[in-house]
Length: 39
Image: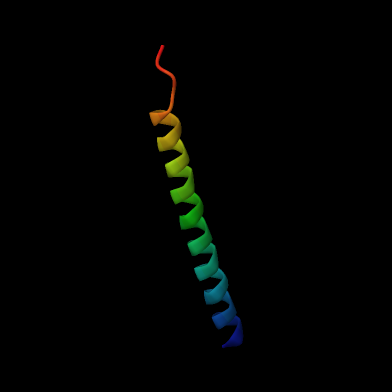
C-alpha cells in the first residue's frame, strides 16, 4: 500500500511539473512570436 501511495505521489508531482514546464514553454513561444522583429 505504501508503494502505491508513493507511486501516486511521484506521478502527481511529475504531472504538476510537466504542466508548469509546458505552460512556461508556450508563454516563451508566444512572447518570441510577438517580439519577433518584422523585416
